[in-house]
Length: 68
Image 1 (tube, one colour):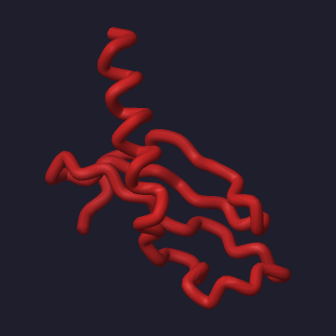
Image 2 (image 1 turned 90 degrees about the vertical axis):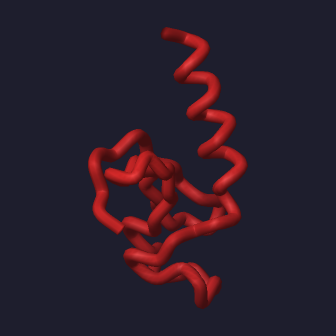
């Protein structure tokens, strides 16, 4: 996966920070950018894709498209 550009970032309830990115293939992905040291979720490792936020990405993408 090659990242074209960053779209936004979010702070998760556990304190980790995720970035939402667009790939060269046009896919929108969410990657963990910074792990909170106190986070107990073993899936939260820097660079991991966070699929649970996929619905938010699609909704945000649709909202941006309707604002143009």
